Length: 245
Ligand SMILES: C[S@@+](CC[C@H](N)C(=O)[O-])C[C@H]1O[C@@H](n2cnc3c(N)ncnc32)[C@H](O)[C@@H]1O
Figure: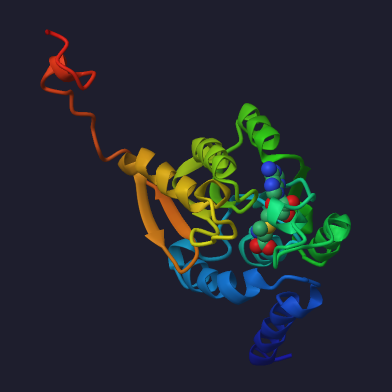
C-alpha cells in the first residue's frame, strides 16, 4: 500500500467509525440543531480539537445522541474519560402525553446502551444512573474535575440552577460548560424552563466567566477571576439603609 492509499484507507475507516447512521434515535434534536454548531466550535477550533486528553461530564444523556458524538469526537486520547448522568426516566416533557416530546421511557436506557456500545471509545464512559442532585454531589465528594460539561437534564429552572452550581465547582479554569435549551419554552411558566436559571447563574459568576450564546445554547468558559471585590465606601449603607439613624 502506498502512503497515499494508506492515508485514504485510514480516512475512510475513520469516516465509517463516525457514521451517525449506525445509531437509532427517535428524536433528532441533537443532530439537527446542536451538532452543526458543536462541529464548528469544537472541531474547527484548534484549541478544542480532537486528540487532546479530556475529562467530560454530561448531565442528561437521553438516547445518547450527544453522548455518542462526544465519544466519537472528543475521546480519542487514550486517557480521556467521560461521565454521563441520567435517571433514564425522562424529564417532565417526555412523560407528558400532551407534549411533542412525549416518549416511551421504558426503552430509553436500552436504547442509550445500544447506541453507546457502537462507539469505539465506550470503555472510557462511566454511566451514573441517578438523579443529578445525587450523582453530582457524589462526584464532588470524589474530587472529580472536568474540562467540558454539558448540562441538559431536567429543564425545571431550580434543577438547572442546582446542576449549574455544582458543575461549576468541578469545572477547571479554561474549561467550558454548555447549557442546552436556553431558548426552550416548553411551558408557559418561567419556572419550568431553563432560561431563567441559566441567566440567573450567569449573573452570579461574571468575575470568572466568558459567555457566548448560540441559537439555543449558552457556552461559558471559566476564566481566572478578573473582577476584584470593591468594598462599599459607605458602611452605613451595607444593608441598603442608613444604620446610623
Ligand atoms: C433533553 S434529554 C437529554 C438529551 C441529550 N443530551 C441529547 O442531546 O440527546 C434530558 C435527559 O435528562 C434526564 N433527566 C431529567 N431529569 C433528570 C434529573 N433530575 N437527573 C438526571 N437525569 C435527568 C432524562 O431522563 C432525559 O434522558
